[in-house]
Length: 481
Image (tube, rainbow, N blue to C red):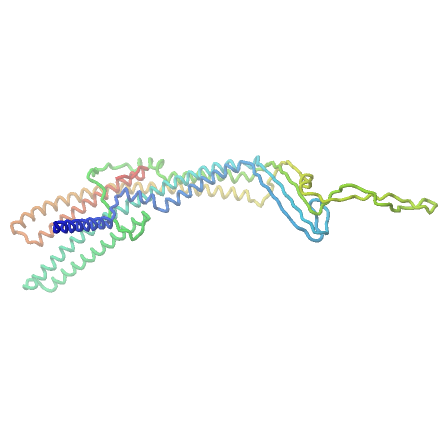
């Protein structure tokens, strides 16, 4: 009974460690990223997309601000001062040599009635600029998607290239070993052995070059996805089993005509041209007079100001003599009785209001308005030129893309024929090898040639798939695999 218990305990512990080891291996396993996952990671993490989205939000705020500029303005002001020595009292508008404190405050409002339609045109321009930034977000995403697909395909190509290089290195080493054996029995010279060693060294260099290229392509894709460069991951080849290799060859002129209405670069350039055109109207607004109305409330207070409370008789004083006599003429002296003028009373008594209308007519401003209009027109011409350049570039890249698609189709057909020929040749070599009519080196070489031809077909198929998707990209279609 005791032995059974210990045996069960050992078995349980063994199972526990096995499960723990399996869990650790799974946890450190490299992530396998599909091409769609790479695109999603890029669009979610890439800072260019975030920056473009922030620019869109900024343009939206500019539009809201330009709309709010049509509303009247309202502002308040206030100041408090303590004066020493001879100073002008703002409440009494008289000089006061004593120390006193003063306060001024007010509220004012103004509304622009006419300003050469500048504010209306600014709203129109800001709407167009908002559309520019929205289109730019779309453009950035499209460009990144194409870059991700290109980098992804480059990884697949470099993996196949590395595999082919390793196979060639294996054949070169087998040949070197055979040359060494033949030299040992006197059937080969040192020159033959040196040539074989040279071919082996070249094959080793090709493997190293392919490994470096694969590492760089992984790094490029990681940077596009904005993940740590040290991240290790694997990529999964897209399923091309259902891909129609006989792709339809597009008419480049028709693709170009459709892309003009769909491609984000053209929409972006056109929106910038429209915004620049409105900028001319904004600049011309400086030629017109401006009309505005305003109103305000104000009051003030001074600690140096007093208020007459009452009057009292303060004796008499001599003001002259009666003519031809020495009789004095006296008058009653009436003196005021002052009290401190309270803050509340002063603010109430000094309360003032105003309403007014303002007209400003530009007569001469150093040709500033004229220069502004000329600059706006030049900016409009530049935008038109940039738009035409975008159209010309689009025309060039579409014709190139269609030509690349035709070339990829031809390459795929040629590589397929080569693979079929290599496969048939290997089948014959394999049959002869099985009956001892072909040595192992010839068999291995034939097998390597067949494998390399198969890799060329796969690579050509990927390239054909990519070139077909590029056409979809210029037609504004979502690139999916």
